[in-house]
Length: 157
Image 1 (cartoon, rainbow, N blue to C red):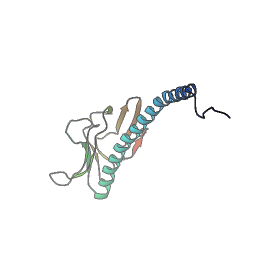
Image 2 (cartoon, helix red, strand yellow; image 1 turned 120 degrees about the vertical axis):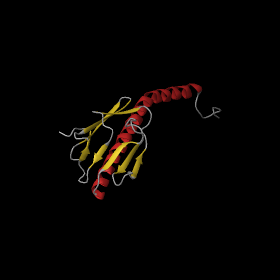
Image 3 (cartoon, rainbow, N blue to C red; image 1 turned 90 degrees about the vertical axis):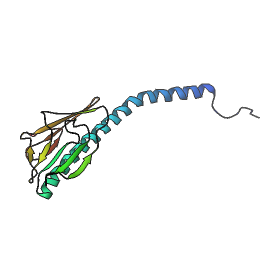
Image 4 (cartoon, rainbow, N blue to C red; image 1 turned 135 degrees about the vertical axis):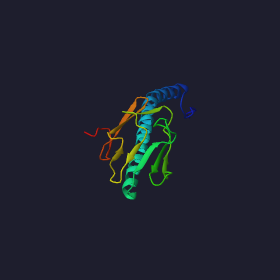
């Protein structure tokens, strides 16, 4: 009769835990990079959707629409607001939440607002606008061309 019990020895458990810790150590940096990449894609996608919304509203309503930071003079990575240009007080069409902390959004020039005309073209400023997004090691470029086309990762060329 065999009196040995079935199960794992202490050495087998320690080896298994050691292998598991090595695998976790290798996976964490890759997972962090994936999270940063996804967050960057989401935030630049939100900006692109806001610009497209402002452009489409300008075309649909037949009026000029404006997108700018909600607080005058603040950075573009803060909360953004889309307005129409009817009447003396503009009508708020959409508010876009601020980007997360650690994200910076810079423009090629001192642009305080982006206006789309009734044909969907860029009414103001009179030159194409290029947004540069940076979060950690992640960077993205978004350009708004004079014809209103919004290009992710390229230029209006």
